[in-house]
Structure formats: C-alpha cells, structure tokens
Image 1: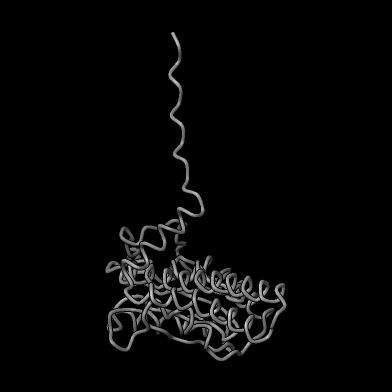
Image 2 (image 1 turned 135 degrees about the vertical axis):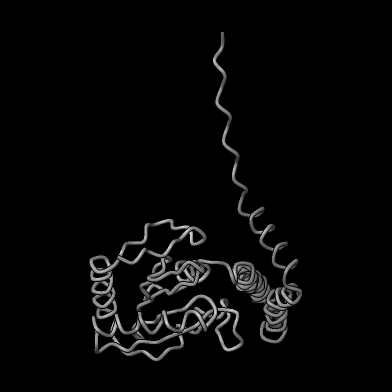
Length: 235
C-alpha cells in the first residue's frame, strides 16, 4: 500500500504579485496615493523627454539615453511613493492596537537607534511604555491615553535617570489624544530630535539599561502577546 504523500507547502507569491497586492491595498485605503504614484512616474519621464529634446539635438544616442533615464527615474519614483504610502496605510491599520509602537520601533527606525519591540512597562489595561536609545539620548514612548501613561512614563524616566544621570531623556505619547503623536509620524519625530551623544555612547547606554533592567525587573518574554499581559502581583 502506497504511503500518502505530504502536501506540498503553498508557494509564496512572486515579487510582481506581491507588488500588485501592495498597490491594490494602498489605493484602496488611500485615495491620494494613486495620483501621487502617477506623479512620481510621469514627472521624471517628462523631464527625461524635455532634456532629450532640448539638449540632444540630432544626437539619437543622447535622445535614447535621456528617455531611458526618464523611464528608470519614473519607475523609481513610482516605487518610492508606493512604499511610503503603503507604509502609511499599514501604520493606520495597526494604530490603536496593543504593540503597535513596538512594531514601528522594530521595523522603521534607522540603524543608529537601539530599540526593542517589547515594552519596558505594561499594565492590565494594555497601556505600555517603550524605550529607544539613539543619538538624541533615551526616548520613552507611552502607548495609550496620556491620562494613564503619563505616570508610567514619569516612573520610567526616574529609573533611567538614576542609571544614566547625564544622558538626555525625552518623553513622547502615542495614543488617541489630540496632542499625541500619530503612529505614522513616530519614526520622523524620533529622527528629528536634537543629537546629544555619539554612536559609541548609544551602544554603551543601551547595554547598561538592558543589563540593569534584566536584573532589577521581571523579564518580558520574546513574542509577548500584549492582549494577555498581566501586571505582576505585589509582594
């Protein structure tokens, strides 16, 4: 009797199919995205044609090169706009969900930053505080309403200041309040903060915070589900 063969794993979609899926998702959730992508595609192409006409004269090779450059520039512009608008749509879809700030810190910060998708403090109501270390210093980000995260941020600020007293500490809020930072603008807000320490100091500060946090508080396991987090019982 022949043994049953194991089912073949589902084949992942190719690059072009993935690009098409991202394109459809983006224009479905962002009305302005299609026009901006068309502008990113057509403007470089038009510039290449204009340059070919005005600068190349009767030089066929020059005309062809300018047009090809315009086409390549248009494709690049289209992809850049698509990537940014798709990222913006993705942020809007996860905004307000527990762990959204951690997802942004993990995927969207530059290499100069040291951050984790795991919160350094979390409550039963799923409010959380995240920490990022970069050239501006230490940035503490509260996820949730300011009325509930303000006290958490202040407590964490005091803890950090006790460990590294000479490093600037910035407090940010991401939540439903009008004065809070929208999730999609968090990476840009972090990168605009004034630089205060060097790259070497960033690693030193982050290592010190991580090492002391592990010995002074309960560890948060990797892959934490924010919806199932429970605050530790008081001893």
